[in-house]
Image 1 (cartoon, rainbow, N blue to C red):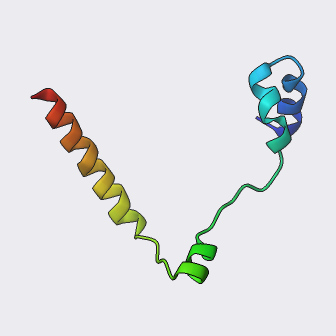
Image 2: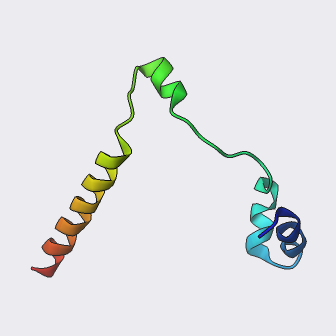
Length: 65
């Protein structure tokens, strides 16, 4: 939905009204500060996705028993 339409609908929709101040702002986040200040290295996205899926499957298996 275009930002202008969301702003118009925010007048009548309380859910959109709460988000109106964020519309059109760049909310991109990076790990640069953690890298710079803490020396933290983020994990590979492929490993993260694989391990999350494995964790969810294990949780589902544990609930089934």
